[in-house]
Length: 179
Image (cartoon, rainbow, N blue to C red; front, side, top):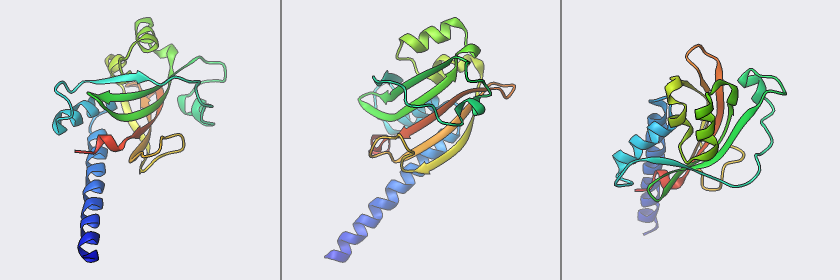
């Protein structure tokens, strides 16, 4: 009996690992995590309307990563935007994200939308045609990710000329891979 139970556990772990790897591939298929999550949500049937919204998480911004300003190519006094959000599709929270971004590279309407709406960063700044450079991707959580994180990524978003736009830490939840 123990052998059968162990085999079932191994099978479940392998399936979870494959689901995480599939999510990771989906995220790598487009510069926008929002666009990738909407495709993931649609493919998995998570919501009647596979639309991702960004719900703000209240609280103060955490201390900036020590290399943040160097990665973004800005000085100590340059203004930064910050958002701490849950990205949700239907009733599922798919990820929790920390996003530091260069306000000076956005037009006033983009800054206003990021300050006062549930629009995800990727949708708001999509017209800038940014690219995504994944700096780290790991199964499990980065520091600052909530308990139960199954995949975490740190990425640098860049404008078409290569100028850094934003640094994001994304923590993908177990709900993102549950069926």
